[in-house]
Length: 205
Image 1 (cartoon, rainbow, N blue to C red):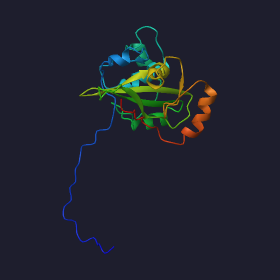
Image 2 (image 1 turned 90 degrees about the vertical axis):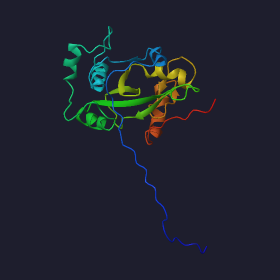
Image 3 (image 1 turned 120 degrees about the vertical axis):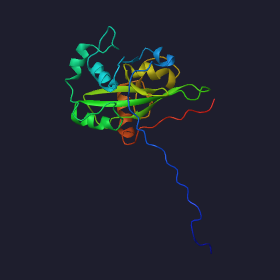
Image 4 (image 1 turned 135 degrees about the vertical axis):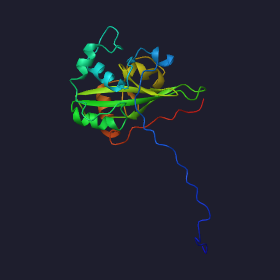
């Protein structure tokens, strides 16, 4: 070809303010999530919902688990919060895991933006560490804030979404595929752990 680049006649640069996802103050669960009975929505009046979710995951309560009690505040102090700023961004969770070496934290998002489709849960951040204890969080949002909630049962939260059934299943956090038994899941994880977590794209109705 005889075509040659000669000059740039016009260049448009569009910018947007970067606002990293981070958990903030309390907001109610969407009804669709609340009815699954799979989530504890901590009723915090501060920006520390991440802290209260982690502390509650390690210290379950049968009565009013969503309450921020004096005991929960004391239990939270057993963790290392050095240089962790609140509200906590997804990126800051990396540091939290490095200074709390027994814990891994997975974060999922929730999409109900298209009212014509069924809403769904998808991975936002999956821990890269194999830790003694793994905590699953859900990051929900409204027009003004984001809020971390504690996922008590990933099976109850995801089963109807993935399979349309309600039997208990084991889930890969990265791709949300479900399995009947632990052995099959572990074989799958050998390969899936080599890839980044993915957000599933649902087909059009």
